[in-house]
Length: 302
Image (cartoon, rainbow, N blue to C red):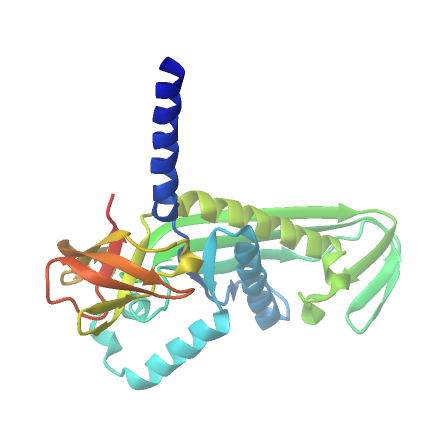
């Protein structure tokens, strides 16, 4: 009798946990990686900034922890808004730009060090940006990352990551002006390896910092009693029944001297219940509250 009771209790707990797994799993936050600035000397400025941003975006995708918005999509949206919105200077530019970014988190970066191999000896020749010779070569890469709340434009955190690599014997190096982050030849050089090390460290740092940031979504459309959200299966939403808080954000508070975004007060105005989900969106109905509109913030109902 005792064994039967223990089995029944265990089965009940298992079913209870399993039933909640679809909604209790940690949601994947949506991030966008902006083109990196390059503050280093030398040529190939655009190639370095674009290449490292794309490499970070790919590494974040491969981590399986985030939904990553394509950089070109981000730049297209910002360019369109720049043309349409002439009154952006009314509030700080960072904050206003943040409001139109199609992601919860924006990641910006500055390449502060991008040092090609340092030859310790020997001679070599350079053909079309690729040098070959015998020597010891080293490379050092450093990037400063800023993690930004895309709604407020506020910098939530910043971190510096570095990568170093070296090689002895036959040296194959790449001149900064000829850097191509998509080639296998670059990846095999000390500079390519140092870049990858810095990117790998960046993914770890970003993951650790964003783990503490609450997940957020948005209402994208209201059609009668149906509420559409931008939270889908790609974010980790499974099935139906999940409850989200509906939150409004008050007037943006900015520093009168610096224009820095200080934040804004938030007010919970109701809750919604998920009725079905697709890859990129879900449908819901109002659980409590009314007057919901496109753009309202959705937070987890813990």
